[in-house]
Length: 278
DNA sequence: CCCGGCGCCTGAGGGC
DNA sequence: TGCCCTCAGGCGCCGG
Image 1 (cartoon, rainbow, N blue to C red):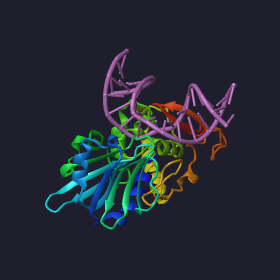
Image 2: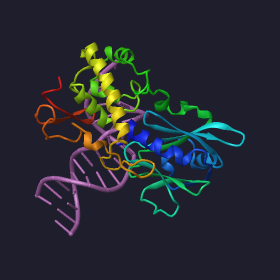
Image 3: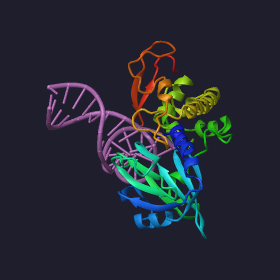
Image 4: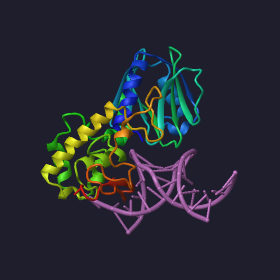
């Protein structure tokens, strides 16, 4: 499930492969993954454009496009659950569930594959994200200075939601998903069921620092490959070898030996140690 | 404001 | 072996 570290690994692996390349052909095999433009308008908006930069905001991949006269359009890709964006040679076998293929001037292909088709691609003319409320409302990048203990405390302080739900709220902090939210709460020793308004300033400071530390570490490990995730070269991540609670229900806690438990919070599995998380 | 639940999707995995 | 059921979860949306 691509979260910030996985999307960053896709971004950094694609950047040297795509920057400066012109998109010469657009093939759409499943128009359902494209919005808000029609498939025809989407293809027309990409053909002949040059990829000037490969950026990331939260879990969104953003490709800055430049044309001969117009520029500033942005191609957005969101991988959601099972999406993959891989740069491959044209003779590489086409994977099942490949929905969009962009051919570059050097012959390489960017292939968007998604078993569940939850993922989305879009072009925003002039880089205007207002057509995508989720992207427009995204909170600060957790690895930036903007995401500070002061900011986080202000956002969390009054809320009556469970802290697990708040960590998954992309308007509070951009890029956390179910895996890293559970890992952050474990390292910070905070139960996922705690209400935000019950957290002390010290606990919020700790959570803020844990978010930064864990995401930075996972970025170094090129993300977590639990099932589907691969980067822009088709390579798996290695952070799954470092997970302490996610998908470890029934396994002894690495700190105290208590059996890790799993409960549903906000519709998602939450894994935690009932002894050392308070 | 907050919560639970559903829908979108397919494939893996468990029970029988 | 095979069938049916549940579950996985990011995110938008809806009703209470």
